[in-house]
Length: 355
Image 1 (cartoon, rainbow, N blue to C red):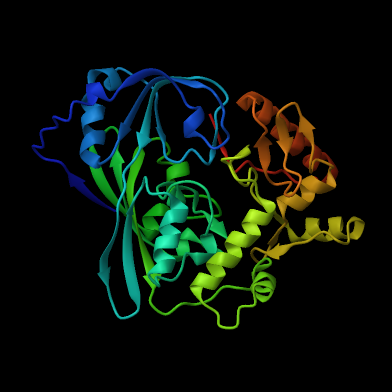
Image 2: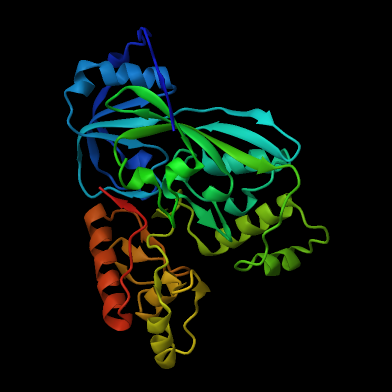
C-alpha cells in the first residue's frame, strides 16, 4: 500500500457552486427509493473531490456518503449530511507485457460499459461479469463475482482518496483482503476512503470459464461453434436478461442476499430431509448453498406486498414495483431471513448495504 500526498496543490474549482440542498436520491439508486439528501455534490476527478472536502459546508457535515452507481444500496431514510456522487470517468491501457493488458478505469465508469469495452478490444478476464449493475469503483469494494469469476481474479491495483488525511493511496491485491463479496473497504476501512480508479490485469490469451451455471447450455442455444470472450459475454447477457429485472424498469439491486456457506455436517443432515438441496464446494469444512433456492423453498418467490416484492423469476432479488419505501423492502428482507433460519437453521446475510 503506497501513499501519494497532494503537496501544495491549490484547489480553486469553486465546489461551493456544485453543492446543492434537499436533493432527491431517487435517480441515484437502482432501487428507485425516493429519499432526500440534505446536501449533494458531484466530483469528476480527484482534485474536485479534494476541493469539496475543503469546503466549509462539507467540513461541517459529520456524515459523508459516497455514491457510485447506487446499485448495491438500500436507502431507508433521508440522508443527513452530504452525499458525494462519484463521476470519475476514463478508460485507458496503462501498460502491457507478453501475457497481460493492464486497463485502468475511473471509479465512475459504468461497469457493464467497461466490460463491453474490454471484450470489444479482446482484453479477456471479465466477460463472465457482463451486465452486473453499478460502477467500476464498487467492483473491488464488493469483490463482485458471477459465473465462476471474481474481481480478485483480475485485480491489479486501485487508487483511493482518504477522506480525513487527504491522501491518495494505492492498494494492491493483498492490501484489499478480498473475500466472498468482501474487501477491506467493507470492514476496517469502511467509510474512510473514496475509490477513484481501478486497474485490472487482463489476459491477451483468454481462459474460458463456461462450466458455471447455464453458460455452456446458452452457448449451444446460440449455436456458437468457436468459443470466444465475445460469445461468453453475450451468453451471460442473455442469461441475466432472462431471469433478472432491468433496474430501469423494476427497481432492484441485483442479488439481495449472499449465498451462505454451511458446515458439511449440517448440510448432510438437511439433505436427508431435502434431497434436492443443491450445493457447491466452498472449502474443506463447508459447502455453499444457493440462497435463492432456500428462499424459494420458504415460499417467497413471486411474493408481493404493496410495491415491495420478491422477483418471480429469481427469489434472490427483491424489487420495488414503483412506490415501495426502503423500510418496506428492508422489513420484507427481515421476514425472509427469519423464515430461512426457522426452516433450515441457516442464517442468510444481506449483500446490499442498508442505509
